[in-house]
Amino acid sequence: MGMPSGTELLLIFGIIVLLFGAKKIPDLAKGVGKGIKNFKNEMKDDTPEEVAANDAPKKVEGTSEVQGGEAANETQKQA
Picture 1 (spheres, rainbow, N blue to C red):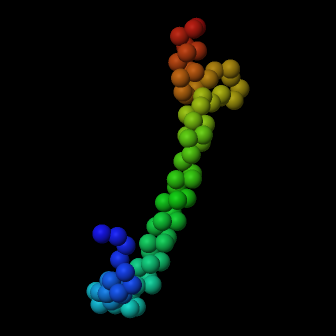
Picture 2 (cartoon, rainbow, N blue to C red):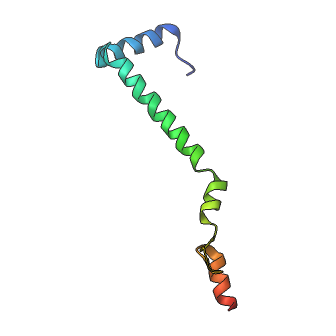
Picture 3 (cartoon, rainbow, N blue to C red):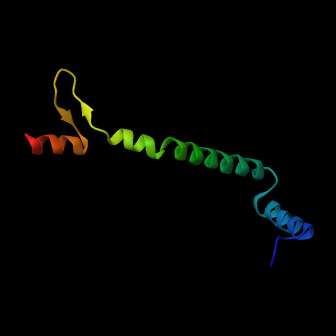
């Protein structure tokens, strides 16, 4: 069972047109395209390097203390 032939694709497309109507198909395609685009953008935003950078300890201005992450716990254990 391989890829559908040209006749089968036309039949499938005809059924889709009957179910949704010719006017709603472009709107449906736009919605699917926007969803895929948003998904790809979110996947790019959450790269492993950025996730690791967000978990890194942050130094508080005006003090020498480190807050957040495992480094803060290690600093407290050494003191």
